[in-house]
Image 1 (tube, chains in turn blue, green):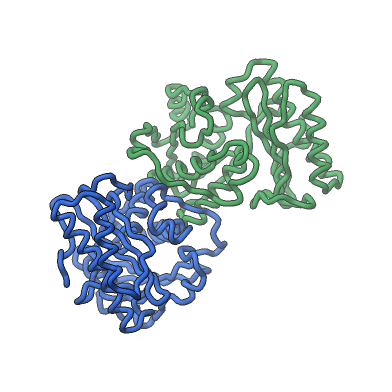
Image 2: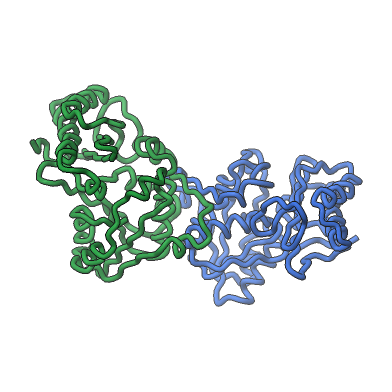
Length: 262
Length: 262
């Protein structure tokens, strides 16, 4: 969806390193916004984005307009099932229907052998994996780790909507995730306790309002009685009217984030 | 779904005449049956079907089992929108979700340039057209006219579930459709009147219970205030515990059925 940052560049570089040729798509997909104001406010800078694509060695850029991608509007809905129903699926009704549809369309239209997505939108990667599996789309999916600034804030196009002290406050999300991770490493297995630890850390930052905080099975996104690998801890929080999301995923023998970025 | 009859053979011949190579799929798709008893009772004769495919010059037969087509079950749903919501969509909740999904999967797996469907399942052809359009599936769709027996009964795999006098009674569906067509040709434009004419004709057959009878825009399947081309007259009726469907489609300057088969 453009407004490219180092997180996107990590996707482009991963693709460039591994693939014979790289196609980038650029389309701010109205269908995945539940809030028209959010769609209107979404940062756009096509000229800048196209330069980034060129600098990253992208071979083909696909920048459809709405009339090209939705010539007859849109009637169909794809509901990817349980993976789409919690977390962001609750906060943004219909969001993942729009994501699943536009990704299905873009996969049909660009026919990649492999498609790259960012871990920051972890649930999105699971929704797309489910859709690709159920529809028998022939594509391999790669999830690239979240890129963070020096203080742990996950890079996001929405960060451009925050001012300086709000960005500072946003760093509490990763501090919270890391505290919960710490607690898990120390042996804590209760989801409720892990989330309490996380919320306490985030609550130290008064500008931040937690929208949800949850720990789920990393692949199915099912709730867990006891937190065992693989799992994802996910948080959404509002700062200055902007909602940011972040997560850490802990897999078999692997913790994909530094445990203490403070 | 097999249990092949001359309606399917018309599809195979149309494909054989027009295409370089022909792939036939054979799969009784549990996901499109709202009623497990209906699924269990659906006629199956794979050996017979494979012979028919061979006789019709099919090059490739794709006969997946459920584990192959749904290795991880099925989570996603495709709702094709308004075209899927009336008529059969009301009578068989979830039916078109299952149809849209299995056809999407089969199109992905077999990658035909052109896919052939029968007009008898007119609404299904519109659901598939909508899904193919929304998902940008690269395939041309061809609808092949309904094949009828000498008395007008639309061929259907379900006819095998009827005994002799029930088959006889089933012919009233096409008599009803034809009466409504006659009335339209005479200048009648009220949907209510056309349907009254149709129901009166069908009601002369006491073994038949009409489940629905409707006239809709042929492409969008929207209800119409005044019946103008293109339109479809559709009927579903139960005979001896089996539900049969039939339709006539009237397009620009074209009536695709004989007006009076009696």
